[in-house]
Image (cartoon, rainbow, N blue to C red):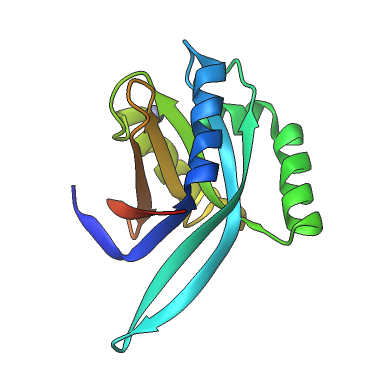
Length: 159
Ligand SMILES: [Zn+2]
């Protein structure tokens, strides 16, 4: 898969542990949740890099199979979380998280959902990093749908 080098997700071990917890809680179903944080534009050698700094994670309890069906079926709950993160903590939505029983690459359905959210007209859902955790080994990968293309991004772990 093509890599997007200019976008990086920066995540602490502590936050990654929360993702793991969420995955374990949802077993055997797929976990889903939302990561809030800030996006920093960094100029490096005349080019821009975008650092998505993960700061707060909300694990969502969902009987739905995907994060997108969750968003649609329980928009009210999403909205509560969104308002708290944005008003109380001044954070923006930076990543839509879910898990797979094995593997951390987007499925065909994920790909369709990424396209759908990119085009749905709600700004908060645009330019989101999709984080997927492999529930078998907690490997985490990040993806973004940008200019009609599915791209993988780097995740930097910080302590
Ligand atoms: Zn998926």
